[in-house]
Image 1: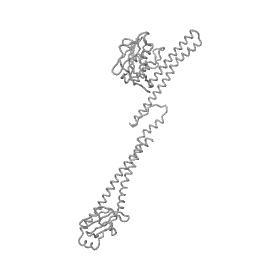
Image 2: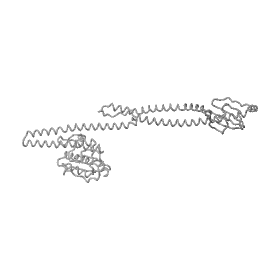
Image 3: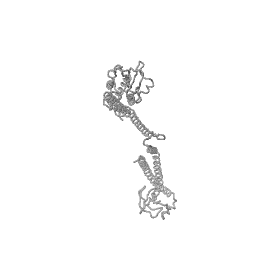
Image 4: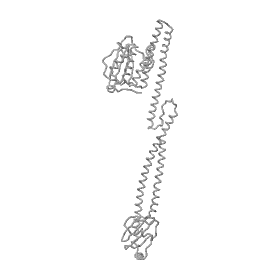
Length: 446
């Protein structure tokens, strides 16, 4: 069932039920008030007749003892007056002795043939006055009043249902327009949906949809960039490997062996580039990282240096490492720090040591990797984290620092570079910290 149909059915039934209960309540009170009013009128008629009869002259009384006075009848209303001795003094109908006979005082119902009468008996000064209303006349009058009262209710109910339908239709019109807009969009169109003229209740839905479209667009851009980068960067080593293998096939002796060595070096470089590309794609693609181990600072530094074969014997610690845990999976923390160490070793003087330190603040830790190189100019500083940018055509894949920047961006840290005032080049890696218990549960998902 559609939302429009559900709203119309729910609100329509509720409205009809409320109007029906109100109408039944009103009609019940109206009927009780109507009956009480007519009974009061019947009693007042009897009292009025009693007052008139007591004011009659003596000669009229003497005449009534011999001949019963005849009162002009009124349609649907009857009256009869009895003397203290039970004689009929005056009456409106001569054929209603049973209905108008004296009886219990007050209101009663009496039947004559197929006609029911509402009878009131009243006694004053020895005289007994009996008045009666025909119930069919009463019912006819009551039905007319009910019709007059019910018609406005029915009209109001129908009008309310029509207004409800129009209101629901107009209220859900933005959803219909949104559906039509999305249905008419090109499958590859990922532009944000306009929120102009949209009710505030629907705006969060459109904002969420726009965020989803933005993430999809970013994912497609990353995939396209990954494909382009892979095609561009793998073409050169593959061509070199192919060339060296062709030389090895044609040459003999030392020339063939040298060509094979060059081809093997190209394979190593190609494998390293592929690893870096896949790591970057995983970090930017929000894939899951979880080795189940806390990111202890000391262990992260130890493993990062151990993973960098070139750092053995060339990396020095400055002061003691703080006891803290990083707010990122240990695998990524090791990768980021190792890439900074490798970069310092590649671009610093050969066999010159590098210095690694860690400084803790209230909520984060900053790792500093300091080499003894000549540093770089300001223009180069701005390009260090760009993909495939290299200070030298022969060194690295150009992805190491880009991976570091992607990792820090994902976990709320940052990386910055500067030429040290005392000489050399410094890379500063800032990473948020967490408690030991929280570090055990840090995982990230796509």
